[in-house]
Amino acid sequence: MSGGPAANPGDSTPPPYRTIGAVLLLALAACSARRLYEGPARPAEEVAVVRVKVRKPATGSPGDEAYTVRMVGVNDLDFEDHEISVEVLPGRHRIHLEWTLYRISERWWAFYTSDAELPYWERTAGGRRTMEIDVEAGKRYRLIVPWEEAGIDWYFEEFGRRPAD
Image 1 (cartoon, rainbow, N blue to C red):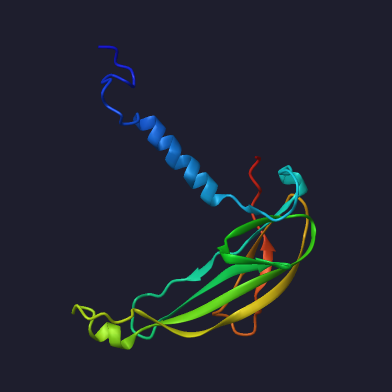
Image 2: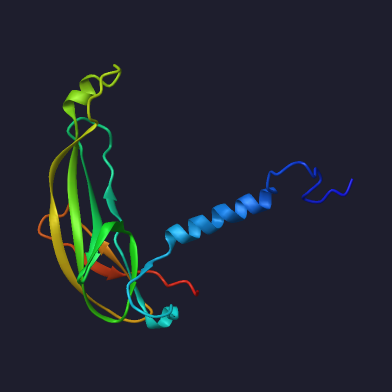
């Protein structure tokens, strides 16, 4: 008995470390920012990251509201779906956003124990908006949406340190 990864020559199951490695690679790929400049990848010190991941979940009561804001394009590029993070070169960029406000359905709440096919969420409002942002190389920015605070507009803020690539 060798005790190595191929202890059973007829078994085609990959060793656990290969499966774990594949999962980690997929997770890292999903977390990476989409590069929105031409040419080869540049060092972190030469690009900026813009992140839009805004979601306010509801508490679960009927009539409670939740919202999402998604990045659907940058400058003249519209995304097929949406992106959470993008890498851009320093300078001014237009970030295209799509927002949706949802409310927990009263009808669903009344019948949540039944098998009825009622929508849990009802879309109550939504729209698109474009914001401009000046970014600096080596920095990360995220969108802040203070829905609960009247009179405060959406804004981008610098956050965290960018991990070395």
